[in-house]
Length: 315
Ligand SMILES: NC(=O)c1ccc[n+]([C@@H]2O[C@H](COP(=O)([O-])OP(=O)(O)OC[C@H]3O[C@@H](n4cnc5c(N)ncnc54)[C@H](OP(=O)(O)O)[C@@H]3O)[C@@H](O)[C@H]2O)c1
Image (tube, rainbow, N blue to C red; front, top):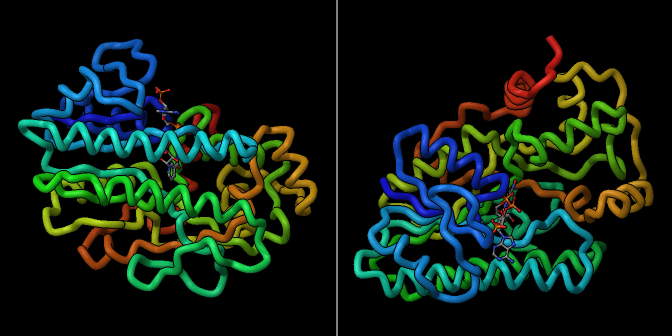
């Protein structure tokens, strides 16, 4: 297949590019700073010569968006919103004008679209969209709004010949340098991998191999469109998630952190506590109904596998 990955230079793009190229597919990446073969320049806002890459391709997986690993200042929140909505809109425009449109457009979305919740898991049919939860900081609603606008930009694109799927992805865990697993493991190895703010908040995650397999599954399944949760069936409370991670690497202790310590840490690391404190309890309802099976359905199995693939891993 010919696959185009707008925003394919980041963590998820690297995972997909590597796996799809290894499987023999022809992958083209759209980036604001092309540096290598198979990379084409675009700005993520306006149609340009890059759109020729989409005309005649089989699959588009749009991953573009300003990183969420930043301080949630008004300017950064606006950039997170605009980069996602604009890139989804312009990918839709490129597909709409293509003489030979792709058969499927997978658009990255996020599991963050669902409400902060502890008591039950969100699947696509019964899950509650967030934004109105009591007792959470007001700005958390903005992240939900970003996800909703992002999905709307895809839904409203006039691309009748192209099937559209939005990927409500949980954190994608891979051993890549700088990825979310690398960061969490780094904290655990420093002894900082204890529960944060009590650790009752749920962590949803998906192993990189299952993420790639789910993407391939959704490309093949002509009968599936709309939102699909890409999360393992085993989300778990943060305190258990970190305990399992520590055990996988052999770290004996993890200092607990209070909410204000997390605020301080997030400030130092130029990040935001929403990423740590929001309870994301999301399960893969539609994937399971469609018969998808996970290679790593539990965090124990996934964490052990990921640790074994890390450089400098313990024996
Ligand atoms: N990583 C996860 O676990 C996860 C989970 C759920 C959802 N997501 C979402 O999935 C997408 C990909 O995730 P990722 O972790 O690969 O993100 P990433 O590492 O931050 O990469 C995203 C890519 O988007 C491009 N980009 C950044 N700002 C842009 C802008 N203003 N306009 C156009 N393109 C821009 C960048 O490419 P260039 O600089 O080369 O142009 C960057 O490499 C993101 O939208 C993210 O929110 C990720």
